[in-house]
Every structure is written in C-alpha cells, then in structure tokens.
Amino acid sequence: MARIRDISVDAHLLGKVAFADCQRLQDRLEFEAVDNQSFRITVLIAEHSPLITVGRNGSRGHVLLTDQQLRRERLELRWVSRGGGCVLHSHGQIAVYVICHLRRLDWSVGSYLSRVRCALVQTCEQFRIPVLQRPARGFGVWARSGQLATLGVAVRRDVTSYGAFLNVNPAMRLFSFVRPAIPMDDVTSQSSLMAECRQGVKMTAVRVALIEQLSHVFGSEQCHLQTGHPYLRNQIG
Image (cartoon, rainbow, N blue to C red; front, side, top):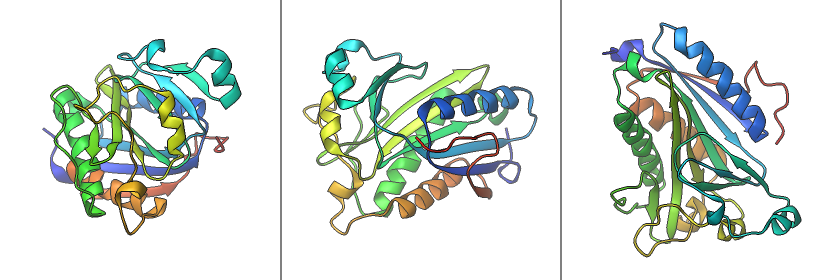
C-alpha cells in the first residue's frame, strides 16, 4: 500500500475546454500512468459547452429530445466508455477527471468511488449544504431539491479516467432534457450549489474546495496546482 507521503496530486485548472480535447488528454495521461511507477494522481478540473454524454448504463431513451430538437438546442450527443447513465454538461458545472493507478495505490474500484463521493459531499458541506443518503445503487450526491453531482468512471489496465460532474450554477433548464438512470426515490430533478446555498457560491471557491477535499480523501500531503495543461492546445469549449 502506498504511504501517505508518497502520494502526490497534480491538479490542473483547465477552464472551459472542449469535451473531445479532454477525452484526448485523458487518453494520453492514462497511457502514461500504466507504466509510471510513481503514486501520482492527476486531477483535471474543467467546464464544457452544453452537450449530453451517454455512459454504459444509459441509453438513447434517457434523452428526451428528438434529433431535430437536439440540433435546435445545439446539443451534441456522445456515447462514452464511463460508467453511469446520461449526463448533461454545461458551463457552470465542474467536470472532475481523475487519472490514477488503482492497483499501485491498493484501491478497489468501490473504495476509489467512495473517496471521490466523499470529497464531493465534504465540498457541499463546506458550503453548508446538507446532502441526503444515497440510494443503494447510486454513487451520486443528492440534496433537498435534487441531484447535485453525478459520478461515472472508466477503468482500463487498472487506471481510472472520467470521474464526477458537480452542478455549481449551470442553466438548469437544460437538465429537463435528460432522464436520470438511477433516480433517488422521488427526487428525480437536478439541483445546484447555487440553488441550495442561500448565501451564493463562486466557481473559483468551489474549485479550490474540491481540490483540497480530493487531496484529503486520496491521502496526499502534496498537491501541485497548475493552470492549464501542456498537452492541451485548445482550451476553449
């Protein structure tokens, strides 16, 4: 098992970046992580232009728009290799992508997911937003008014990619276009930190809090924060 002092987190604030560019970046980092013998965990923090991704547990039936309506709304539809169902992405939502080698860290997929979810919960609680108990089959985060965050990861050759999507202050109208794959009892709507927090929240503050909480749950005493990534050429999405 990795010792705490051996684990380091490299966090990259990518800003608004095209989803396809993020996919290519993750693919390259995943390839490098397979043979990298360090205990480095890479965290990518991004925002995407509106689009819908369909994970392994999702289907076209979870998207409540016709192809013509998707074009009218300028919403791209992508099938991706992560777990979870359909996710609506938009500016105002934080996309968190984590690349780490599970076997090297001696983590199971379940314990890794629990760590990521714990960081999301602690971030919400840092802004005084209480979360509800999760359903047995769900790894998202729910609050009083609806779902705040969705988790969906991929694991290949023991290396993770994708991660989680946290609603801070997105255009909530768009979320009515997608049916959640795993609703929580009668709470099927989406919510956001802005909707749940009376005092309001800022994206910059949430990003910093989330990176701190991820470093904590990953057991890292070293966190290196950078703006952008040298592998990315186009960071506008």
